[in-house]
Image (cartoon, rainbow, N blue to C red; front, side, top):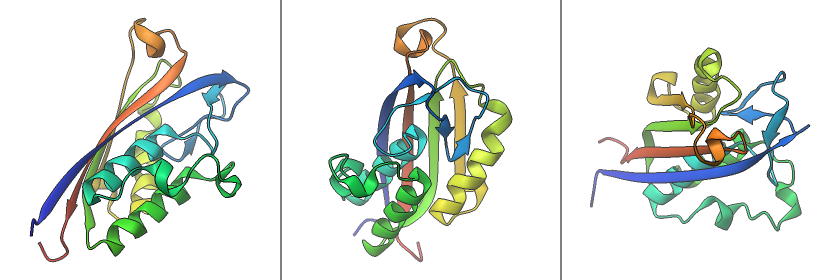
Length: 163
């Protein structure tokens, strides 16, 4: 039986005016656009959830929290991520570390990265040093560069307890 497993996640949300902007569990109140979604639309949490679920062989976020289910309308994505952690732990794994790259023109992430790491670590039951969040821009290319969306790529390492 393997001691370690890795998974990847990817999520993209359209940015719309007047929508609350929440990324990595942190609200950016001065941002005029926010990610559109059935829940609070936080693509950082969603990509990390998919990475964790994939590593554990548990499918994807849509399988566990479908956007057709009214229970998840407006849901806090940090809560969804915490529920994913519970599923991963029930399957016999614990989070080793996670890494997310956020591709967007706005908001500027750098000042908020430590808060994002803290919020995500809390949801995952790990130390902030086990969570990496990096921001980059589309540099005018593609939908991210035109400010139409935010895209997040994530990876997760799971370990067997005691490994």
